[in-house]
Length: 87
Picture 1 (cartoon, rainbow, N blue to C red):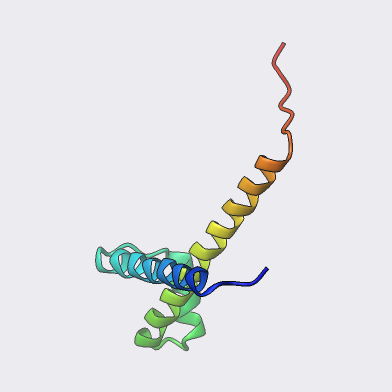
Picture 2: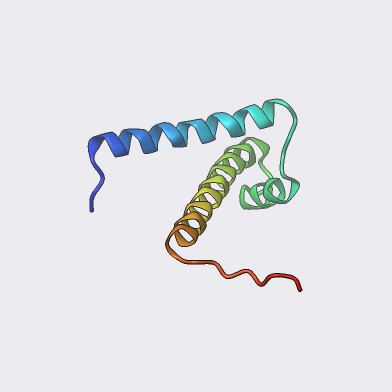
């Protein structure tokens, strides 16, 4: 099953929204210190490069979270979940 042009466009638009979200977080002073530290380390301490790396890492992090959520939702939709009842 391949991507149609519409699917690709929708996927790109969703990705742009993630970049926008990260940009807004940075503008408001919100940064994940662990991700920022990794980005800074990967950028040899060059702050402008670190910020660009941080954006990429955060967008990927959000994509991974979304994909994990979608996988979880797909599993829950197709399998019966047995939750033990309290006696």
